[in-house]
Length: 438
Image 1 (spheres, rainbow, N blue to C red):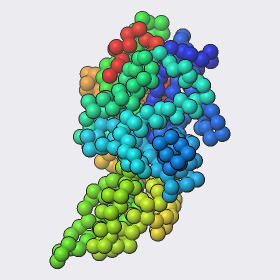
Image 2 (cartoon, rainbow, N blue to C red; image 1 turned 90 degrees about the horizontal axis):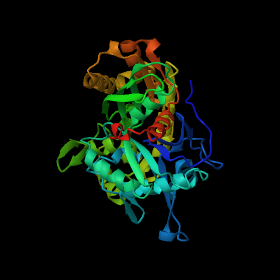
Image 3 (cartoon, rainbow, N blue to C red; image 1 turned 120 degrees about the horizontal axis):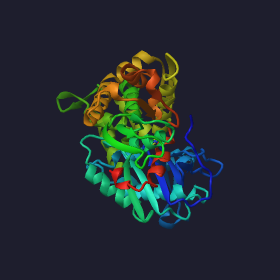
Image 4 (cartoon, rainbow, N blue to C red; image 1 turned 30 degrees about the horizontal axis):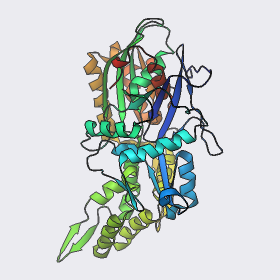
């Protein structure tokens, strides 16, 4: 059953904003348990889903000499002029990273919050007036556990605060799966104990919520939340690791004086992470790769890596990876095809192979589900309903986790890309808002 949307006049006092790793979605609250998704306007618009991407290019006619676009317009700008632009996607994954300081964009160095503010400006501009004037209260989704190695949630909060500064009089943060829980609860006609599993691009997050009967003073009560920094982007990285990186020198060696040493893994770690690959096109990294190529036993392989970085082929590479992953969600076998950087890859991949590549990640996701249940003091048998959302929830091995534990009859889905924004908008109308904020 799709989310219930109530179409009324613009200007509801609460806006739910699902600022996602891959896509962003916004929804206005409309009262009476309904919301209206913001639809973006223009020939390139993709309905109510706005790609979380930025593209920059140099233009002396513009203030500051640098132009910027976001969403599908960023993709179009990049595809028109890939070698003369900077394309950045999945930048949300560095929000909690103490290592990340700035992205080098031509002559500028942009911090996370500066990237975020530019993204929000373009999102508002493409909303066809639906976000003008700005809402009084904005409920922003955030992951339970941030992506990245040793994420710093305090740093992420500071960066989010700076990103959203001035966006609305009130900014509140709510765990993303709680937004999805509130959305799904609006469909229920009887009390239930609900487990929500949200599989995004950067994180997999879980919440347990007690849902009362319709009309109750407190319809939803959060019981627990847990999460892990593993999701769609990690699965993409596994595909790149097995199909692409061996052709770029991974596992290879280089000469250092009279020794033969293995090439450090740092280059390959960045290359298999889309958010980091997008930032590799800078003078320092390219100089390091050039020196590595000179000493590599197989310089051709390093040359392929340099070509992909210099010619901004990361977008095309990860589009090919995404197509393979989506195909394996419905087929037992799929074809992978990519050409660029002096290499061509054609491979038949089975679903079983893909599942073996992500087996360790699946185990960590299962452990996080256990964590959410344990924090709520519940067993699987005490969960009445399971709601799966997010693009990666469609991957068969992900769904099997929940089929095995809870049975098909308790599992529901729908609105994989929009349910969080819908629920966040509804939470924005709650009197007991402090019960929900993170």
